[in-house]
Length: 542
Image (cartoon, rainbow, N blue to C red; front, side, top):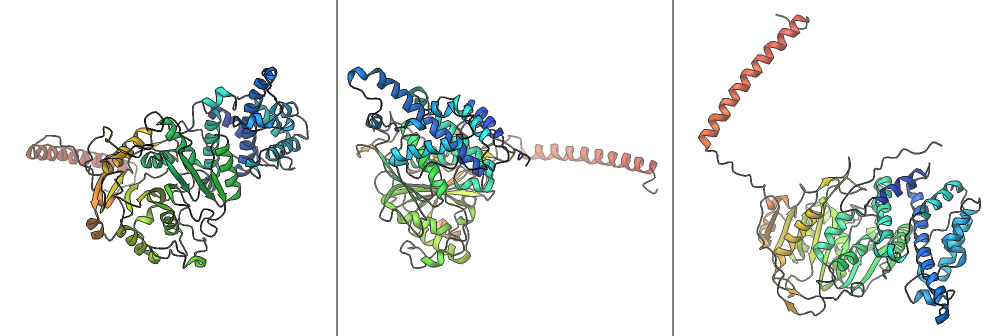
């Protein structure tokens, strides 16, 4: 079978995990894919990268323990490694062992045995790692070449971990596989710029963070990165990872495994459950301080007919043919009394009146839960060309942390922002994200609570919020009622103000009229010339 054509190009996006070598590594790994489907190859590559990472970390610390033997260290004691948050790697799973046997026809079984050994000795990884490298369909020569490729990058040693080399490679590969898989790619990957925007707007410094459809855990990873980036200034004295508790759920088993690996490689603890959030809610009693999510758009086969009287549908039973407002109400149900939620939905959720959706949206608006709506640019997602928006909900708009926003909603229309990173994909830049988040923060700000002290502190230096035609508008509930409870930002922000050129109207009209006359004359001249040419060619009578 001929190799599949490659349509995916490395992205040079500032917001992505691209710093040079990731793109080269991807190009080489992709060339080794041959005719294998991207969805299948994804687990082959990411499994090996994970294995190399934990082996690098183990081997480095093993060498240190060997050096410290005289002081009582035991390099073969698994507890020595667990005490340092390093996975114990049994001898048959250590990378040098596999590398030395990469050219053997049994390499597939050796990798499977390595994965099984790691799961056996590290209960937190049970049922997470791929163990089907011995299958006949996987070309063992290509597998050996892939092992050689991965050998050449340091991933888990102390220096690499400090630079998050693995995190960058893993995220870049996830994004590239998502692009290669098209629609199916959206099941496990939300573009980084969308995740970053949600996190920057919500600022999840402290508390319980929940994602009911967590994919490969991108929301959680970005939340941790956000806290670490702000560690010196947020009052938590750099204790980033201990300040939030992570809860997630994912219905797709293979995607759930990706999520677990994505967190494990960063040493992030999280309660990530496998199952359908609608029919088998694995966190039934959770009340989250922050909810971030990118639920699948417009799902029609969510078996809503089995949940018509569910206690989560406080604002109306969602239509059985579309799960959008089932997701919205599931998240509202799981919000803590002062909780905030930010999530992605299809644009239709802002205006649809089909099957009772308009009534549900009206009830949510009248309950004063909607805090902010953001209309996004097109072409941001790998999985769909459906226009999307961001919803931000607040359980209590007058809880003392920010100003009293009761009866108000901020509308942001950012459809003109972003830049094309390739022929089919757009992304929001860091400057775009900063502008959007700063606008939301200025709108809601009056006073803030220090994340750790929980005492009122002065608001950081922040520009005063003002409506900007074509970009943002703070609307009262009464205005939203006049628009039939439609939440499309374009209805509220209006048109962008046109810059005045200072030319008096009479002078401008004289100039434009003169220009128009010149263009009429030129048009007549060209028409005469064209007719003459056509006549000479015998195509016009006269």
